[in-house]
Image: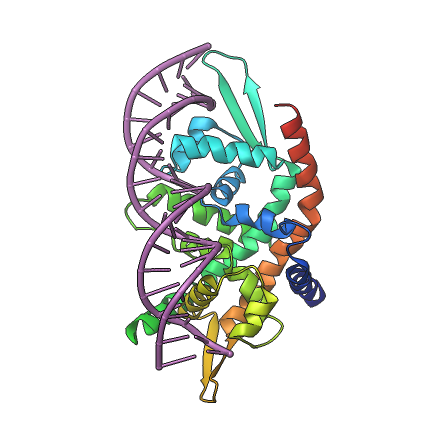
Length: 133
Length: 133
DNA sequence: CGGGATCCCCCTTGATACTG
DNA sequence: CAGTATCAAGGGGGATCCCG
């Protein structure tokens, strides 16, 4: 377990050392999407099962149509989400997590857990920091 | 294990439903920093032990001085990093992870692992997607 | 219903120069 | 050494209108 963590840290450091020659770090490329404003929110929302476009829009009210479309396309491009069109009238489109998408839920869930556990400490630390400026 | 993941998913969904009344989601607030361009890179770099300002700058060559300063201040504000000034000449300042900062390494390491494992599949998915445009 | 296309703002990031 | 100050640029993201 700890070995893997160290491996990750060493991977990052090694990439830093070699930076500039090999282009952007692929891990950072992937992680950028994690931190993107909507990607992970949609993945977690789709974790409950496949959903249609407006269904997603209803469950994530504060996303704009544009960003919903764009984020879903990016997720589909990365192979995390699959898109199925039903030729009904009016047309309906269903989005669901792929196996790869599902596999992200576990490590990402750990992070959410950590965030949940740590919100209190972080908030306290911020108050202390902001108080003594 | 899976319970916790589901808990996380449900947490997100419940917050979506209540959004607008309670302000920004605290978990998303925390996760924003995770995905921030430099925060996690610095945390993983500091995972190897405490480092001085220019030492960090050397190990992460493509960060600007400004962003290094700013990111370190944010990390310190959130209680993930502590800052110790030594009154020598010339002055030296040492940054190190707090206990809270260390506790982030594990869940974040899982994510890096996932990214490492999945880079191949994601790259392949992108080629397929881009090929059939 | 499920999007596309367009306009535009603002915030983050980078480059550069200066300081205790 | 360890920052601060200022200016400029780019793109992420919202609002709006339109379409099959």
